Image (cartoon, rainbow, N blue to C red; front, side):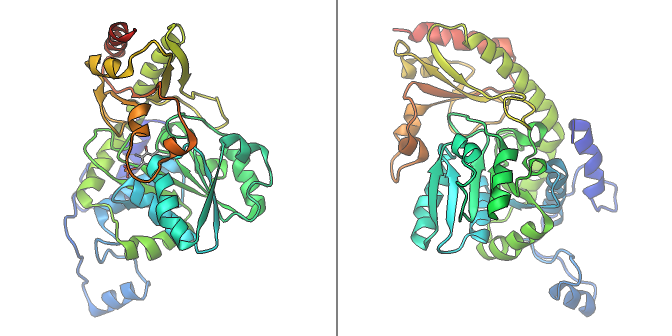
Length: 383
Ligand SMILES: *Cc1c(COP(=O)(O)O)cnc(C)c1O
């Protein structure tokens, strides 16, 4: 998939619809009846793959899964009710008590909580390492069952050489999983770099409109079959047909949206560097690591001590304060809000981030409007 055109072409191929619909029909049905006893028995005996029950299979969901498999260049895909459902169902399908997981530091905060609060009590032990350790230590994965990666990572957006890590992992028989929500298949296709399993919070760029919470996993047919048989059907966190419809709609504009996010992000990166209040910008771009072909609109900026961050946040007009990202509207999430999160530690609290960091999700508004808003809020909040 190199541009938006390709996704539309592929859509016709994955739709099995007698009316010639251009958009996938929403199969809002819990079950699908069989024409004969024989057809029913064939399905139960896995001699056919006719849709039977929406917890495990649905035509609208299958259309989205087909598109995602093509986009990520995988053998198959499976949708989930959320990114966290995709992550937890994938880890539970492959990890068993006594296994070790190697995970990047600064992983998505709830993924860290899943490792610590859900997997550790079941005897699956996760160790955390900086991205460079995965690349530079060829024996890091010795005896490790699963490597759990994000490139770039959350909050501090450190990108890594996935091909190099995949090579080390293959030597140790370690299964590699990468969260590709930030780059999307438009800018990075981890399976082509040797990663075994790629997953997404489809709530972000794939949906693209801040109106859906969903997840998806793409891998070989064998790995996806294992997830379907085990955790999709037995934990049951399936993707709903209507949400699959919205995601298919999102995919059709994904490449066009990513180009626009990149143009705005490039403008910000160029101009932020010249501001005296800015200590650093975390925003990997095209070719910063092998296999990364673009810069998305999600980045973080570290200010110096002169910027009053609550005041800056409140002074913004276009940027709304909120979690999540990847939609039309620009958002700001100050790191100190993440650091204030109650309950079990999250990865930001565990591995430490500067309280002067703010995460920006640059949306699809006019770039010059966003920049003017940013500068005007900054001028109001320098002490
Ligand atoms: C949001 C997010 C998730 C979790 O996805 P949900 O759809 O909110 O469950 C996972 N990984 C990353 C990188 C995310 O940003």
